[in-house]
Length: 185
Image (tube, rainbow, N blue to C red; front, side):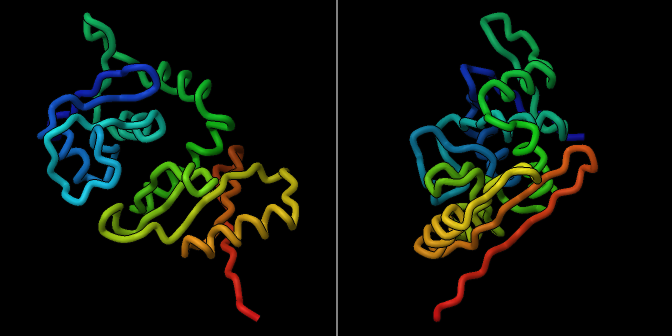
């Protein structure tokens, strides 16, 4: 197995300080964001790579990265990262289940905050194509109003994306995806 990428846990992020290693990790699936480069046009960069906790947890689980923190470079366990993520993300377990499922289908998943959703999902990657999907995660028992669906649909249409509701059932480990398609009258 190839050597794992070393990351440092700082605040609520993981940092790959070595730009060459960060570029290498980024190329594996568009993980993270190069520091100070909002939309990287190239896969090689000369700055550290910043990972959010969701993707960091996924990469630890896949055995791709190791995480340390503090001046002594103390190893950070998967369970400690998960506990921190649960404090940071509302409904973390549901969102992480969807993140894992989409990543396991070889899709590129990034935070969707600028679209008012949980995830922006790419087929090929940021800078290569536009994210064709915006995904919001809901509990199967959540009520969703027609107004919420229309708002999400209008936003998705405006930014040329498909709006998807993801509803994971943690007990059965199944995820239902509802994809909305809008028609012009």
